[in-house]
Length: 135
Image (cartoon, rainbow, N blue to C red; front, top):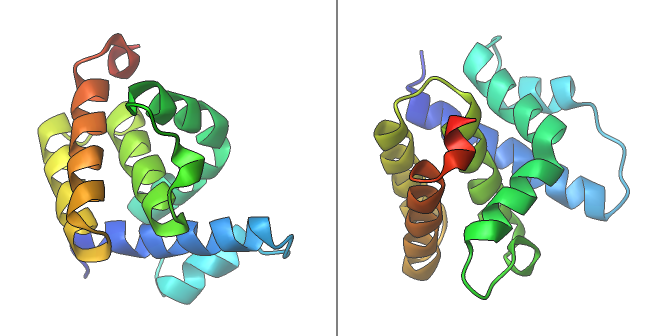
């Protein structure tokens, strides 16, 4: 059994692949991508991945709203996936907000650099304190 943090990393890899495939106009099946990364059915990974796919435009707008003089599309694909997944979990899932923010910051430390990790923490904190997460 994987921890929720390990599942977050799996979701990150899946969304990263989807970002690459979308840019290259490559066909993919979301369920197949999930099965490649995670052999057993997992509601948390399914929720994260499918939620980001379903709400991608809304999440992009939300993240961009709280990025200072920056935009999500200027980040690399891994960092884009970090921002989309973390903002989805913060806004739509029942994970306690502080736990979600802290866990995604830890994932960011592993997959990105210090500047992005600080930016992610700031954006998530701004979303957390806004009316956007309480709608």
